[in-house]
Length: 269
Length: 265
Image (tube, each protein chain N blue to C red):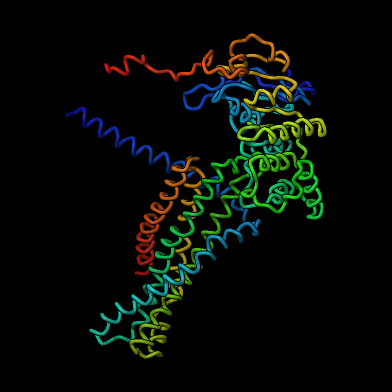
């Protein structure tokens, strides 16, 4: 079994998942090694975020196995799942900062909830994490006073507070200006190297992804369409990836939502 | 004709199963909430924060409403009592109406509008902005960190607010009855003292408001927790909290009152 291999962080085997009756994932096989930065790409609604939910045990697959660092995630009890999650950090799409807490208290949250560290120590740790994302000077602000990019950086500081072994990023670049995209991208890479983490990035920002990732997984139709190095993506002739990379409106991913014949509908039956 | 009947029956059935489904969800939610209650009782600082937002911030509306309700009761009561020449019983009438009924019920209705609606909106928005999911991912159970303290705060605030409502009401009645109309001060208080029973009146009223607090608290956190993560979803969840809370309070009041009086006879 692949999961007994100590160099493997995540192993998905034949994972299927549906919302109500709508199939989202139709048999995903995927192995991610420790220390890798892996980008998962694909169209909107293609099950990328669902995949993160399955890895973190927030969702259960309808069939197939999810193994994280040797643990059978879907069958863990709440206590064991929470023990595992202490070693996982997740950056949410819009940061998901607690709006009733200051920046400082947001980053202090994991320490206060999960450790018995004295307050003086927590203060030092929080300021160190905020310094790493360049926002030590903003620690007294409320989340509503931050720009989108700053909020995402504070959320990143909070997500890595407990030095997780695995970081999950859900659309970390969405809605940010190019400067912030660059900053977040560089931080992801730096944190990954400095803390020896494994990083999984769900995104559709191709440029930043190619600069960042060791490996790019392209999802299509609920399956792994291609699994390739960033350089290969630039050259590939694969029509789906080309449409994606070049931003073409029509192609393997149709521009039109399925509809009945245009003329018939306009003229009435 | 039969086709239409069938369609009506079908939609009625859908309505019924939909409601039952929701009720089942609420019951399972309440069960899960009870399981984490003990853990969150120990986090007193979290509960105190919610007590401030739900309880302390409701003080002014409760006290002012109580004062006016007491004043109106005094005017209405005096008008009836003077026909029988027993105006000095005004204190008893007002105190019993407030402590047994109006205190707990009106407080619960005001609380649902003032505090519970805000709790529903807050939790619904926390869900929509993935704050609850983020907490869950940090291995902190939102049920014990966010939901339980708000639920407990409602249970604790409600009887205290109801007591304040009743006290304000009695003071209002005293202002109208004794100060303005001129009923004998001593008779007003001594009759009240002689006729209001701690066990039958005060404790039963307290019990009522604890039950109301539990119901209103549960409804507000439930509606917030399962609110659809959209503007309309949160708006309709907030409305549902106020409507369902108010109806539940009035229904529970009938049930409790019948049970309490049956216990007496």
